[in-house]
Image (cartoon, rainbow, N blue to C red; front, side, top):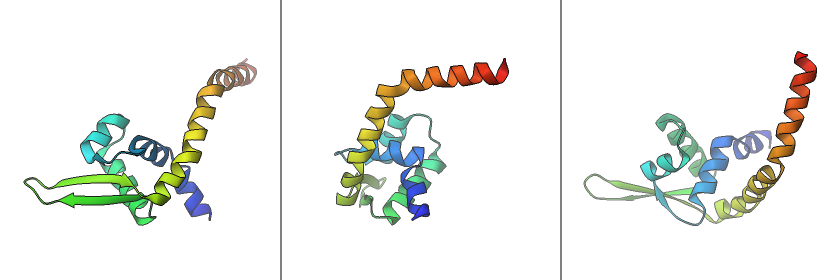
Length: 109
């Protein structure tokens, strides 16, 4: 259980699942959307999500081959709590920042 919770709670997993939402995306499209993720980390995250059944990978034979990633039914189920967590984070960002600043002031002052 802890292995799966650590995967689901990983920041890259949260971002990949959020970006895929209800739409399939190609690798580079997903990488551009996320922004600061390396190719290696995105590849690893997608493989792990595919292995766990959250993401499907479809290869279209062409030159060059096109690969699209999409959430599976299980991945769409995961999207709901991830979306709630993202909304909670945005709603509470100012309060969290204030708490961090107060803590840092106590520790450094």
